[in-house]
Image 1: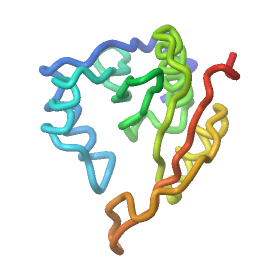
Image 2: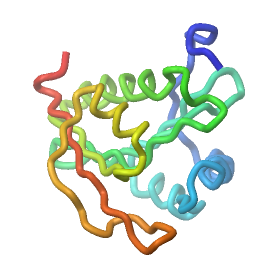
Image 3: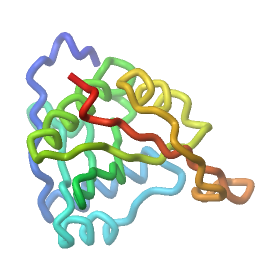
Length: 157
């Protein structure tokens, strides 16, 4: 799917009614997906949960915890059939603009070192490596580290 053909993707709040579909999509995207309960708990806790869609198609979603002047990106997904066309970059740029309006100073995230596509996306948007969380993610051979990355919004235009 080309981002050029669909310039008007909508970023909207996630609702409890969306949770079963989002959990279903997450299960298609990851070997260790979030559960329905993870998404429902995030909504109940007041996290910023967003859906990115074109017409009735959900093309992506994100969950962000906002606290103490920082944003922590907990889940960021573009569904497989929409990957590779620039939608991840567009969604992340929209999220950066959204959190900047809330006077947030930085965005933090963890990414698997094996997820080179996501790592390149984040690096290309100005996120920098800060640290490593050892054995953070479940993996087929045990555990995988997480790279901690940060985007300082005071330097991003």
